[in-house]
Length: 289
Image (tube, rainbow, N blue to C red; front, side, top):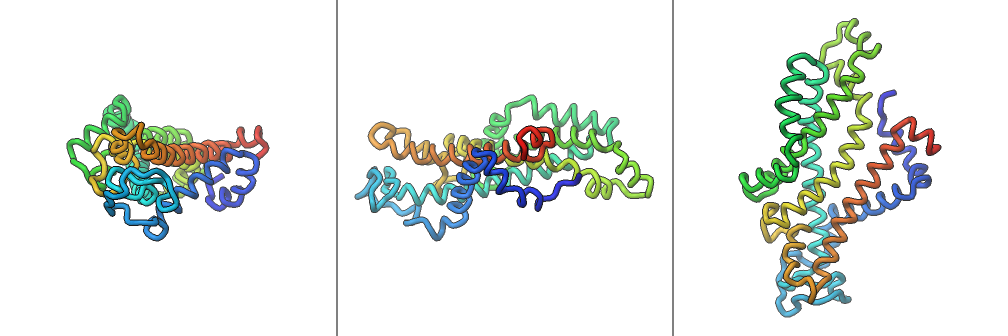
């Protein structure tokens, strides 16, 4: 049965009731998304405003999450960092998914030497190397910046989507409804987008949800290493890097960004696991969803 987004939305309430971790994930992600989208309105101060008089202050009524070594409000920087992480994760997953659908779809649908070339010389080559190392190498080569960061992370992550799409296409390309569409004269693109893609989108959606968590963690890693968005733009990774020298005298500088990264990653992982259980017929029967 083809995937319908409305079906997932209709059963979202029941899913969170039966799976508490899904509710926790939704709570984390709601805070993450609202904080990122509304950071320009809800941030108490300018995240780049320097106030050396109040540097390295702990949490207080004036600064709920304290201030950093330059007196900048940590809460404001966390909210703007959520905006950056949200933009990077959505962009990277979109680019990786587009590449994965294109390359994996061609390999699975056409088969033959096209499948051999794309799988052996493209997918396996990228999958043989750790994605974070590829991202670090390309980020160092391309230089800091939002576009370069997205490209570096997408280059290291598209192969996983391509391998998944290829496997799913191979599983459904010879089904009866595909043969019927082919017999009626439907072209390859129409068959793929009208008959194959709607029936393979469930695992792709789960992979993309979990992939968002990986991108947030990778972006924080690159920013920690100085290969992400250049200063003074606030990033959770760069905040953790700046806080290393004040780990013992101002631990709030580490605790709040680390909690933000952990909350966002856990939220996407919990939601991805819940979607996998909800969209898998066998797991759905076992859990009574």
